[in-house]
Amino acid sequence: ARQLMWFRSDLRTLDNSALAAAARRGPVIAVFLRSVAQWSSHDHGANKIDFWQRGVEALRDELAGLNIALLHRDIDTFDAAPRALIELAREHDIAALHFNREYPLNEWRRDAAVCDAFQRAEIAVHAHTDAVAFAPGELMTGQGDYYKVFTPFAKAWHRQVDAGRLTLRKSPTPQARLPIDSDPLPALPRLDDAPVVDASSWPAGQDAAADRLERFLRYRARHYRQQRDFPAIRGTSELSPYLALGMISHRQCLQAVMSENDGHLADGDAGLTTWVNELVWREFYQHIAFGFPEVCRHRPFQQATEKLAWRDDEAGFSAWCEGRTGYPIVDAAMRQLVRTGWMHNRLRMATAMFLSKHLLIDWRRGEAFFMRHLIDGEFASNNGGWQWAASTGTDAAPYFRIFNPTTQSQRFDPEGEFLAEFVPELSALPVKARHAPPHDRLEKLAYPPPIVDHKAARQRALDAFKALKS
Ligand code: FAD
Image (cartoon, rainbow, N blue to C red):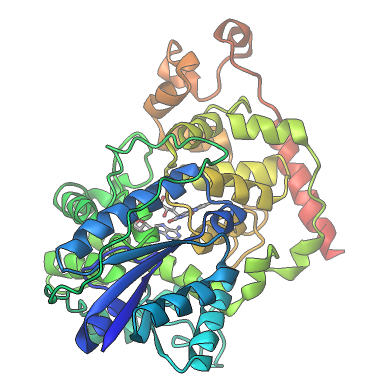
């Protein structure tokens, strides 16, 4: 009997739980529902949406090799998903629908509505756990609560993860051809901005992702622990956009680590094990998004911080967005984001902390701005990272831990190379001066003075957080 595979952010045929299950039961027809208006309402910008589109194109070719047709429907918002899928199921005489679960609130609600509609229509529907080793709810504290702190979560994860959870799902073999053709993928509607991402640097699809993983493991993984904090070095995997849209799975990543590391995830090479930890962070934030759905409603994880007196400061916000704060590392990072659609993790932390602490501007504005520009924009990690930096989240950096942007710059871009690349005005300065350009040179360099004084801004943030306690 025919099975309908609904692809969302799992754009691959390899190691795909729902696709493997569907292919076991019968011939498969695939569908992708493009919901650009919904994506935009989630603040996804042109870089991510363009990558999504290219990912679906790549998927169509991968599926063609298996004789699986990929149907396409444009729906504006998630509300239209149940009807679109039921219509397709009836039209193609589908016995069961398959999809991989997604955990943020709107996605979860959409899926619940789809399940309801299929039950009413008496068509089977199977939701699969795929994007994480443990479904939210499977890994809980001794008291039966969700973990609120990363380290015990990670310990439990390592203790309980077993081979079965990480076994690669069977890739389907080519099926007998059905009399159904793939739909052409219509061009994207006009978006507010044009994508800036260089498509040759970020080719879409599972082959590109597998290539990237292989190169990372061959050349960088063993130095990851030493090199991952330096934005001038390509020391990280740059797999985030691929993981966010499921062009590669966490299982594929972890299996590859194990085969390089005598079967281990937590012992052995320090570079590899540190990298595994980052994948566990990714999973932790998926659990948080599901276990504490208020974070999906623009609420802070730490409720007490709801009352924090964020400042209204349009000029400050614009300066941050445009990379004109007068703090070179912040400006270089923000220009990297806007110009390339990606930002290094160390700098995501530094810029997020600068907005929420030095400028005391509501972290939610920064969260949305990141989302609009990132090619890897992903709700759970972005929200988790922002709330961490703003000290409103799980594991939050204690509110009094406020990075000094100049010291961060000296430590993590000691040669000033990253600064020179993205703030070329400063490249004429000697390396040491780039981190905090001398005031008497600013005018000539056409570079702004610091928008706030570090010490005073730090104190202002401390006072605002202390005021919550009284
Ligand atoms: P690697 O260092 O090679 O790590 C491997 C993978 O682990 C990443 O691809 C990613 O999937 C995961 N990972 C790494 N660090 C984290 C982390 N701190 N939290 C969750 N997962 C992690 N990541 C996103 O994928 N999408 C986002 O929208 C996003 N927004 C962020 C916002 C802020 C304020 C902060 C501080 C972090 C954010 N991150 C986000 C996490 C992290 O910065 C990126 O995943 C990482 O920079 C991607 O580069 P990479 O693939 O080379 O990572």
